[in-house]
Length: 120
Length: 403
Image (cartoon, rainbow over all chains, first blue to last red; front, side, top):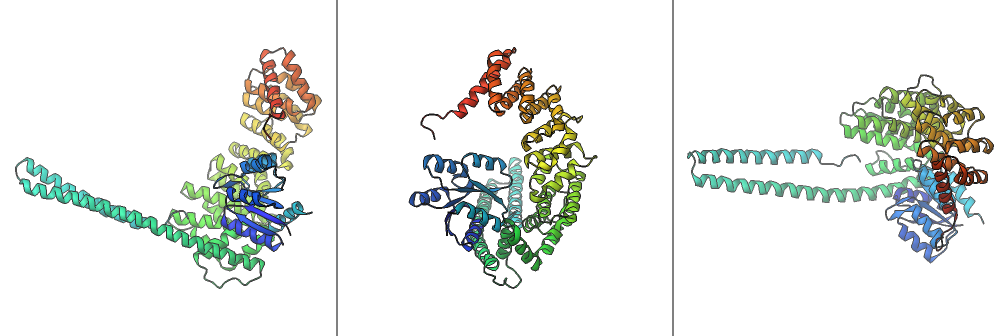
């Protein structure tokens, strides 16, 4: 079982991710703000971060830069993105994201990708 | 939700208030006229003036109270709706993951909204299961009836719901709606249509749907930006849509541009052979779009290499710019001499594109750029080469205290 932090402000998508990943046997914590995500990461280590790009208190890309360059975390990060944000995806990968998932997503594919990054 | 409730009530209230105020002011004007000619006494004018002030005040108070009450009630209704939707998302996820039975019909508004949100978020096997539930409750037929509603807001609500539901059987209705007299409905129908097309399984139905959708976009002359957006929203169906534009010999110029841009942005590698047909097109925007697409895809077929080299001498500046950008895909031995020449182009933009392409060629290109910075016969080429090389070095060199 892996510990996954989901930073997603849309309550429906957050609930779906929670259910899909929990059903696959992972421990999931969903937060809606970047500030809450940062608090979690300062308190404990997680195995994977699922990060939305557009959040109420800032950009997921900036958050990615902070956790890589300021917090020096090497935790795998999967970016959640709409299809129209291809430039954001590229920028996210340049800033150190390890993978990305576009919405709508296939739960089976999502779980397979998560398993790949959380495999010990 | 396109528009909240209460539009009619607010319009009626404003109409009543304005009519009453206008009546009072008319009486006041008549009395003032009578007073000026001595037909009306001062006390009657004062009384009417007082009544006018009171009626205006009352009118403002009524409108203010209505707006405040409307906001308060709306807020409470939205909170209740969000709670209901959130609870129903849990119910639908239980149906999906705990094999619970779906609730009996009819579904409340929150349940429908939650089901559509789940459908919009999921694809694959779970997405197909949600689509079955949507179908089981007859929501597709309900929304399809809605697209024929006389009110624009009702049609938009139905189109938005169909875009979320992505029910293949609704595709003909959505395509027909692209001919709607209202532009906003046409655009919404096009977006919903392409999202629905993406849910149609690959095969003849998807091919026919793609052809019909493209034909509807062209006949109804939707702006190129909308066509491009539709292509980008195509998900798995994007190749069929782009193919409809690029493989037809009679496609209008605007459609070709949209198709070429989408092929590049979606990095549709399978279309690189078709792109060759457009590198010597009579329209310079088409030529430029073809080179831009090659560069975005990141592959240049050998048959297109002579065209890229020739386009570096195109009379149109922006074609030369995109050709210079695409030239980074040539073999290094071929690219270096032609980009060296392009560094001496009269256009600043072409020189810059050529220099950047040289940087992207790797060590050989950077070395050539360094030589150009010192020894190119054109002064402006030397300056551009030096500047782009400095920029590239600055990007590669870590700055103290960062990272």
